[in-house]
Amino acid sequence: MKNRFFTTLIGVALLGLVACNSTIKPIEVEVPKRPAGQEHAVGLTAPKLEVVRIGIIGLGMRGDGAVTRLINIPGVEITALCDIVPERVEEGQAILRKAGLPEAAAYSGSEDAWKELCDREDLDLVYVVTDWKNHANIGVYAMEHGKHVAIEVPAAMTLDEIWALINTSERTRKHCMQLENCVYDFFEMTALNMAQQGLLGEVIHAEGSYIHNLEDYWGEYYNNWRLDYNNEHRGDVYPTHGIGPVTQALNIHRGDRMTTLVSMDTKSFNGKKMAQKFGVANKDVEFQNGDHTLTLIQTAQGKTIHIQHNVMTPRPYSRMYSLTGTDGYASKYPIEQICLRPTQVEENPAIDLDNLNAHGAVPADIHAALVEQYKHPIHRDLEARAKEVGGHGGMDFIMDYRLIYCLQNGLPLDMDVYDLAEWCCLAELTRISIENGNAPVAVPDFTRGHWNDVQGYRHAFVE
Image 1 (cartoon, rainbow, N blue to C red):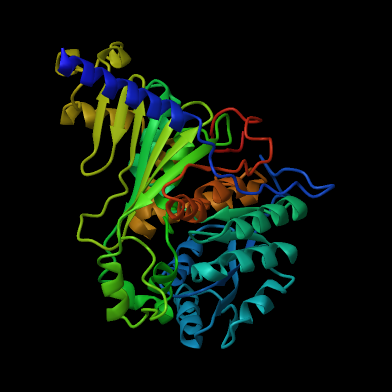
Image 2 (image 1 turned 45 degrees about the vertical axis):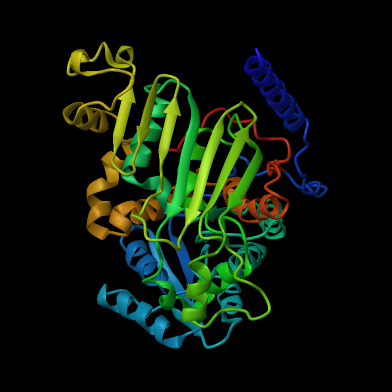
């Protein structure tokens, strides 16, 4: 009797705790009013560009690869190249010469050389591949000088930078796209197609991450800028590879939106050791970024997202990609798996229903058949060429190809400025949550009221 009474008291206490927590209001950040006379950019289109003239800023770890990929897309001209290190510009010129193409205008030697590139009249697109701290500034300047802009990830590191990019894109009517390549990876797009075709039922939960031990790479970043950023900033500073693909499957700002997040991290165990090893440790400030950060996100339609970040500990590479639906499941790591209700494929004569159940992965032969059946149309058209040109197995080429295709045909881009905002905002919002005792934080509506105008994420194609 005494034990039963004690158990009842525990139950009442837990119910009270849940009730108390349910009334906690999330920390809210300011959502600035849309400037007068400015319209939203949901579904933004721009006049067709028969030839897309491109200036590339940043020719280090990613920039030279961009030159190689872009010259393999019809209707592209590399007009200008810029890097603070002159030798890197020359490496880009060498790629053009080897392809039998004219050299581009060259800018280097100064931290502001990129402004001269953006000032040119003969550019349509500025392609930004610099360190994170310069991404947003360059993006705003390029749009203000009449250029569309495509920015490597993360395209913005603070909410102020995000709002600056949004307001500039809305005001100038210039595209501002984040160069998120993982949304074009082969399994991610196949799973997206499965979700869009209804194979998984309604997607209600998704997971993503960037788990990649960078111990062998820290020294390759110019002036240690990436490790230095981790040294000075707490939170998920590199969320877009994980969150990008899953938000497309969840139709974020196309019928749903992220409303609240909660984040927490470990202490810095390995991070501070890396900072000392590479000479970026700040004697006045302890290394900020935890070795492992995890974030939970709620959406307006009652769905959930789980995101993780870890670049400090020995672990197999993982983007943790998975979609959980009411009738099925698809995940990529550590191995590709698909799980379905047998009723989802009962009309498919090629699939043996005796080998299916709703609590185990489908056999390898059925997995292969489903992956082939639901291969995304973009991959059917581009897979062979993408793998030939390369870039993370081909997904980088597809990213560039789709950007150019949409610009040439006057279509909305696959990723707009609000995708950029929603994926990048985790950097600052997770820090706010962690530094306030893992408190819930409200995710701003970056569309400022237009997240429900479009129903369902879709890639645009010429009719």
